[in-house]
Length: 99
Image (cartoon, rainbow, N blue to C red):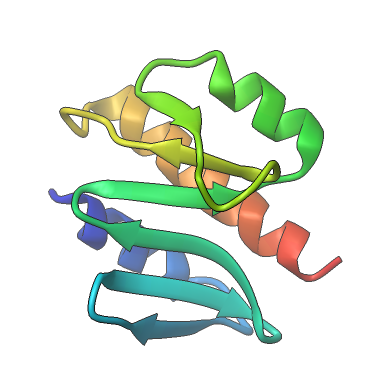
């Protein structure tokens, strides 16, 4: 499995959601608000502050250049733990975009 497949699978069960392909990758939106962006093997999530602070302390994460609410996730391998975190953060970002 690759990161794009993981995110497309996570998006399949969520509504409303809009995926837009760009020159750099893919951006997911809810009600016109971006909440996840994939490019070059790295996904960035717009998370609620409390989740974002916790996420930064986990492996393969860093602050995102997109802003304070964004967390970058670039796992070298999609093991079970990375899959679980990626799906959970995608869903949390989607929920947060609807706030």
